[in-house]
Image (cartoon, rainbow, N blue to C red; front, side):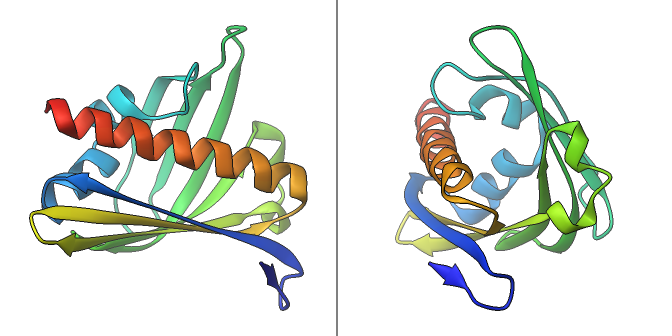
Length: 152
């Protein structure tokens, strides 16, 4: 959908996973856990640092099948354990110096019986190619998270 104020695309993906919001929030925010499930198929999290506080930063290294790395970086805007985190999103180190390129990600963790619904809202996406890439990436991440929590 188009966000008129920012003239950009917005994406919404959901997945219900095993575990309570506390456990799922930790899986999303603790580097050792993130490294076990992050990324779509054929992408591996090679490095992850998270400073979980408003104004704190994060860095995730996505190792692609050709062994190249794409860095995902940003800062936390809201941290409300165990139900919500919001952060900026920059892909590639070349966008880090350009605040206009800051995409926005909001992740909600909602109790659904004995499970948790994870909702990822990704906004300020600049074009359809990036939208398609993010849609594929988030679907893969949520699949990896579900698989990880099923075996944890």
